[in-house]
Amino acid sequence: MTSTSPPGVVVGVDGSAESLRALDWAAEEARLRGRPLRVVHAFIWPMLHVPLGPAPMAPPDAGLRQQAERILDGAADRARRVAPGLAVSTELPEGAPAPALIEASHGAELVVVGSRGLGGFAGLLLGSVGVQVTAHAAGPVVVVRGEAHESSAAVVVPGEVLVGVDGSELSALAVGFAFEYAHRHALGVAAVHVARPGRPGGGNGRAASGPAGGDPAASEARLLTDALAGWSEKYPNVLTRSATVSGRPAEVLVQQAAGAELVVVGARGRGGFAGLLLGSVSQAVLQHAPTPVAVVRAS
Figure (cartoon, rainbow, N blue to C red):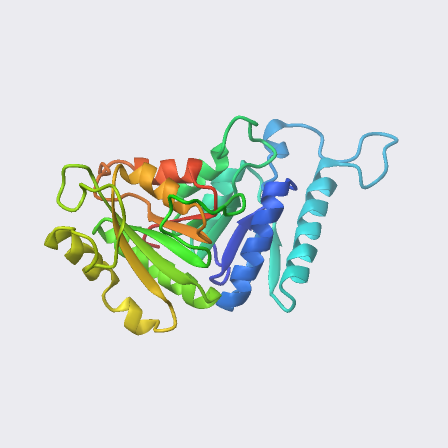
């Protein structure tokens, strides 16, 4: 069953600090998109067959359902403070968080989740909900995690969106997402193509700024040029840089993510297997990038 709600931004909340950070991010993104925000809190307790109301002699607002409603009400109030005038709705589906958010993704422009909620284990960088939603959602998903940090090894500078380019169809969707996001937020775009060592353009281990820079082979240069074709003309206010970097795609993108405002990757690139919903590069970036990550697939 698909949602009949108007297209907009969906965010999952559970009361954790990570989910509140995701809520703030989603509220601002919904405001800039001119779309409503739908706040979803999965109510799993009915599946566990436990009492939902207050215990005997307990205050009337002490039950599990009342607690869930308070989480939703507080999140909605917070979203309206972050983005005054934003249309905010709430939803309390019965079930586990990941299936609830996957269901809510149908018809949504974007789903936003925190990197690890209340059910996460301290040793995990990305909780199971984030993994499941990014793998199975019907459209783009953003996982909001810690603040960006600069790195002397990165070609990305503060104020840029990093997008991984490999020439695949999903990579093309990721490039479009990156430019649209950069346009809304007055940011630049840094497009990075990773050439594995031994391939043309992959021998020096350093970035070659721009399609004409460095000594990449013509095919590597064309791949970047073709990927960016038309987007700079569509969004002339977006400062664009491109680079070919030698190395393994996952390691390079995680390293280059330091300093980026957002990292954008396709759900599965050229190196992925057809039966996988989320490629190894996307999973590695989700687990280790120090900044919010968008995983893009066709809606």
